Image (cartoon, rainbow, N blue to C red; front, side, top):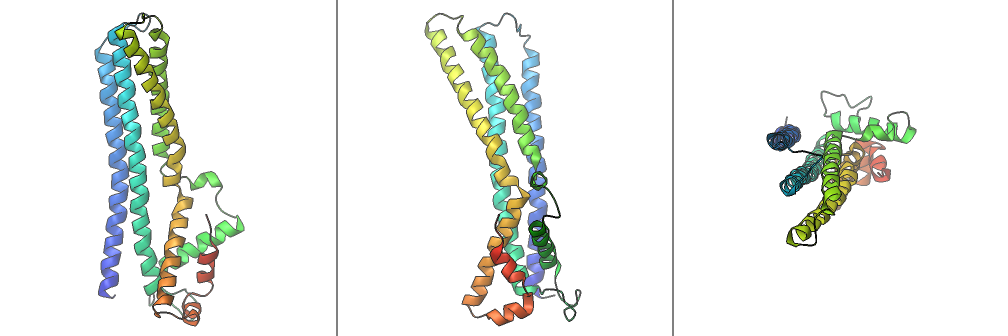
Length: 249
């Protein structure tokens, strides 16, 4: 195995492991935050039927903490997407410059073919519609589920604040309560946005799109530098090159 290929394989494996560890750490962090938040609520014996000024401030604090957890999940999803994009860039480089499409003359073992074989099967499955419904392409749905749970709790706390704010007269405290209510509306709005946008960063369908984009870029680079000719690409990769160019997410 060439030294560069060995290095790239090790780097690829390390990045994949790090990405999935990051997902688990993010989830554990959010659950820990939630546990502490609910513990705070349990420490103060709030009478939900007779909510006072301190109770409203506590509900706002709870809503704020849950919103912060949604921000963490959103940023973590974007980081996951960027990290996987880097992984697919390395994988695309390995495929273009080291792998060959299996055939009756290209024997796996003597040649490297895993990535190209895996992707060709994926492309064929999508084209033929024989595998996976669209919903199956959702990956890391735990981000979306956690944001949904948090959104529900933020809404509950916000409703509790809304229901009591009108009982306060138009004083400094009353104005503060109105401002807190408006902030809660922003919490709900942005949390709903996070809930809707996160699948864009955690979708397996987009993973295939990133792979295809990087493959096309490296194929074009190989042609521009003269490393490959169109005939050499056809000989080495068969119709896989054309499948990459035609693939769209």
